[in-house]
Each structure stands twice: as C-alpha cells, then as structure tokens.
Amino acid sequence: MAAKKPIILAVDDDPQVLAAIARDLRQEFSAEYRILRVNSGPEALITIQELKAKEEPLALILADQRMPDLEGVELLTASRELYPDTKRVLLTAYADTEAAVRAINSARLDHYLMKPWDPPEQLLYPTLHDLLTAWQVTHKPKYDGVRLIGFQWSPLSHELKDFLSGYMVGYQWLDYETNAEAKELVAAKGHDSTDLPVIIFQDGTSLGKPTPAAVASQLGITQAASQDMYDVVVVGAGPSGLAAAVYGASEGLKTLIIERQTPGGQAGTSSRIENYLGFPTGLSGAELAYRAWTQAVRLGAEFLAPQEVTKLCVQDGYKVLTLTDGSEVSTKAVVLTTGVSYRTLDVPGMERLSGAGVYYGAARTEARNCDEQDVYIVGGGNSAGQAAMYLATYARKVFIVIRGANLAASMSAYLIEQIRNTPNIELLPFAQIKEVCGQDHLEAVMVDLNGTVEKRPARALFVFIGAKPSTEWVCDQVLCDAKGFMLTGRDLITDPRYTASWTKQREPFLLETCVPGIFAAGDSRAGAMARVASAVGEGSMAIKFVHQYLDE
Image (cartoon, rainbow, N blue to C red; front, side, top):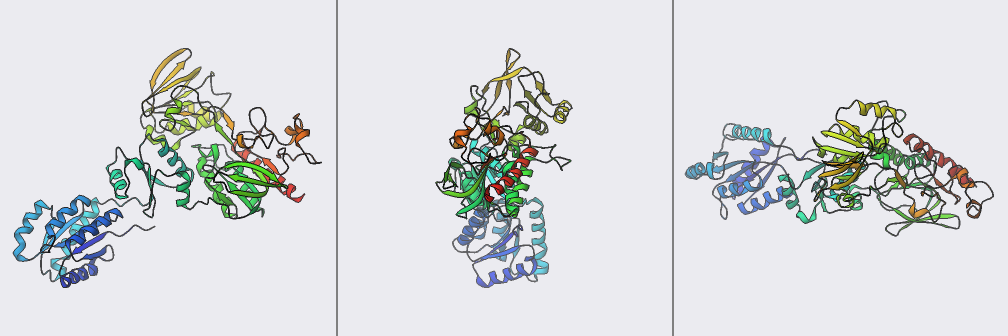
C-alpha cells in the first residue's frame, strides 16, 4: 500500500484568487503533494480536523488574511494545536503587512507572501520549495500497518500481541502510558482509556477491547465453514494438524482445519527450532507454522480460526463437530491434533499476575520489554532452552530454574552447549519458585535455592513445566490413558476397555482411536515423541489411514 501524498491546503474567500493559487500550486507541486482548496476559515478548520482524524499528512497551509468569520492569522494559530509541525504561510495585501509581521510571533508564521504573486516562478515557488523541504526533513511518515495501543501490563494486550504475532501480522505496539501519540490516536478514533486495548487497522477502522475472533474477522480470517460435508476435519493447527491438512488437501480430500488460537501450537511459540530437517540455520516456530498454513490453504484446505470444537458425536457413521458459536460441521473422518498445554505453576500470585509479567510458554512478544532486566525461566526442556537463548539477547540476566542437578536429562545437547556459552544465562539447580510478587505486574520472585529462600527482582517469569493434553472435551468419546492422552492402534488393543469399545471386525489402524474414522496424531496421542518432525510425520501418516478408512 503506497504512502499517501502529503497535502498543501489553500484557503481564500475570493473564488478567483483561490482558483488562481490552486492552479499555480498544482502546476508546480502536484507530482509530490495533493492540493486541497477551501473557501472560508471555519470550513478550513473543519477540514484540518477531518485530516487529523484520518491521520493525513498536512505539509503546508496557505491562508488569506482578510476573510470574514475567521481571519488568516486566527486560522493558522488554531491549526497549530492539531498540526504543530505544518508550515504556515499568510497571503496578504500590502495594507496588511503589519498584521503579517505580528503573526510571525503569535501564529508561529513561517512566511508571508504579498498579493499578487506574479510571476510565481520568482515570487511563490522558491519560498514554498524551501518551506516544504524543511518540512520533509522533520516529517515522519505515519506507520501504515496495524497498530495496537494498550497498557504494558494488560493481559488482554498481551493476548492480542500473541494473536497478531501468531498470524505473522506486522503491528506497531504503542504504550498508552508512555507514548503521547498513543493518547492522541485513541482520542482521534473516538475511544478513551476504558476501551483499551485498541487496535487500529490499515484502513483506519478501529476496535476497542476486541476479542481475537473480532480481530480475525477484520483481518479476513474465515470463521464459518463453507461446506455441509467434508472428507476430513483436522482439529488443531500445530505441526501435526498442519501436516495432515497439507497432505489431505494435496491428495484431493475435502479438508477443513479448525484452530482455537493461532497456527503452530506449542511449536509455534518457539523462538528458534534448530533441529528441524532442511533448515540449517533454524527458523522460528511462528515462521514454520505460517509457511505450513499458507501451503495448506494454497493446496485447497479450508482454515477456521479462532474457533474451538466443544463436542464431537457420531451419527450414522458420520462425525458431527459442534463449535463454540453453536454451529455444526459434518465430516466422514476426523484427525485430532489438539496438542498439549503447559501445566500451571501452583504458587501464590501466579493467577493474579498471569499475562502481566507471568507467561506460560515463550512469550516472544514480551522479550523487548525485558531490556536490561532480570528474567526467570522455569523448566528444563527444549522449549525452555530456546526461550532462554532468545531472551538472553535482550535481558540483563536469564535464570533457568530447575529441580534437578542439570539439563542433560531433558534438553538437547546443542542447546545445553549454547546455554553454557552464553554469559548472561545462569542455571539455578535444585531450585524452585515459591511465590511471585507485585502489585499490578510482576516485580519479584521468591526462589528456594536448595533450602534457602531468596526474594529476587524479576521483570518476567516464563513457565515451561510439563504438558497436559487438550483432550477434556473428547475423553467421553475416545479412550484416553490415566493422564488424558488418546490411545490409538496397538495401545488400544492392550487396554482392558478395548473389547467393549471397538465395534469393527478389523483391528484399529495405527493412529486410529477406539471410534472408527477418528484418528489422533501429535503430542496429545499416547506414546507421541514430542518433537516437531515426528508430529509432522504422524499428521502425514494419519491421512494415509483416512484414505484406507474412506475406502471401506
């Protein structure tokens, strides 16, 4: 989207003079500027207010002095409130020279020009060129993308940052408390501080306190299924779900993928995946997810987000999925790739400060706010290691809190080596967080270091402790193990409940649950590997079994 041309505004109540000045301005400046003409002072003020509301760049105002209702000097003085940096020029007759000289101080006038200005090549253009060049030097073009304005420690602001980042939507974050422009923008869009966070979109529309669904709708992300019946519906858009969607769509199946948050699942929050095949320099989880999502859509898969499946039932062999909004989707087969979520850290203060300095998973959107501050990471898996490396770029010190003696049992060797060679990362073994402290945001953590409790200042706490499967809504339909992971294939056959639940003559396929035609892949499946590559492999394999099931 090309940047808008800056505006030159000409104001005069004499139609002939206004036509002449507009003609001369267009002749010389129309290649780089838009020329607007207005025939009265009050109308000019309204125009300036409208330009400000639309965030249009106003480079120069050229106003006649002798106008009824509002003189030129008064208009130029009033315009300073809305456009302090705009250049101001007064058009004046010889008799009004004294008023023009006084206005140089009172209206911060940049110049005055005598009528007539003929020839313009000598008496008009050189002066205006100088003024416009000076304006261009100090003018900062308006940021042309999505802008998010809110309070730094607002959980909803954090949720929206993560949502936009998850869909790779570039956005500008403006802190309402520290940024003067943020307050002006919010007021100009008709909002106040009670509406925060406010999102302003590229087309100038804005939403106060929006839900992710409202943002998705504005960004053009589909939220309603277009078909009555699908061959396969994939629930969850982590690596396994995206792989299933890519293979399903590429092999001609009518494929729908439903995601309740953003593509990528837990992998999508990873700041850097370095051991995924084919990417020697590594890539971020969000980038991998976005590429896979784009690929699936290009091949013909339909994508619904943010939408959550609340219920799954079987009717005459078909599977019917009920969504949060009450709508239903019918399909011949289902691939459940619902993934896992981080377990909560159950210590005082966690719930109160969640999203305000306390984050589950790698909150990449908050890393820059940790500049030159201390941050703590709880957990010793690869996700924790990747987050530590990313945060170390910004934070003064990154502390990794683990219960054991070292990271060898739970983290890949390449990450352990990187952490060892990063001077501002410190491992705290035999340690645990006992409490998190702060008024409206995290200020300190109470750390138990091998029996000694210390209170330490902390800008942020990132939690990566174990994972629980997101299967609560489906455990009444499919068999799960004691921890809630879905049983498939051979694991089903050895379960004592198998004979009562499996109805077909054949044995279940490798990734099939106890309901024929419902498959499970990725981290929410019992026995899964918890690696991106294996999740992608399982998602792809699931489609092979979907084909076999549909052939029956």
